[in-house]
Image 1 (spheres, rainbow, N blue to C red):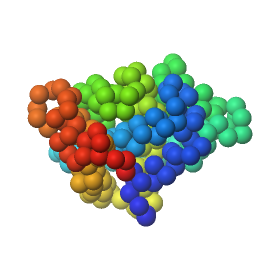
Image 2: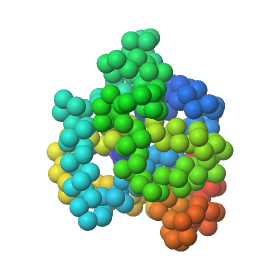
Image 3: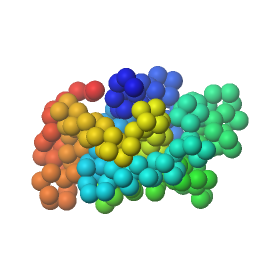
Length: 229
């Protein structure tokens, strides 16, 4: 597996993917691209944090095996094809119908068809009680409002899990290997700093005050002006 999980996802969520995503959350493609480049490191870094907790890697590994592997897997290529709406309304994973149907399912259009489509549940597991801080920090840093930031995170969470499951399968990783790989991803986010690193620091609330503020955003790396990955 070449490249990091974040780099792989960024490569697939640029270009033609940005327009439909931006339209769904109600912004322009440039703003959506900036927000994605900040949100992905934050989500993957949070997974890395969770995987370092006692039994965290095993719990995540079991969830990937149960909900995102084998017959239950949501194929990442099909998911991204759905995001692009390729081929019209019938495109994308079975029954989801391109971007509108896919994102309608992800963003709460009734009960999720399956656990890997339960975006709210997945995001809750990734961020826990830090979810409001994540939404607020992403909003402050990118110009999205909190509702738009929340929608974007809901869209990205199942995509991250699908891509992570694919890497686990391709690398034949066990829980220990998964924990190690995610730990390296988190360390890389923190070392590179920038907006993603600053947001990760805010989500993990390094100063312990429970608030997202500029000191949190700037604590790791270049913060708001640190440049894109």
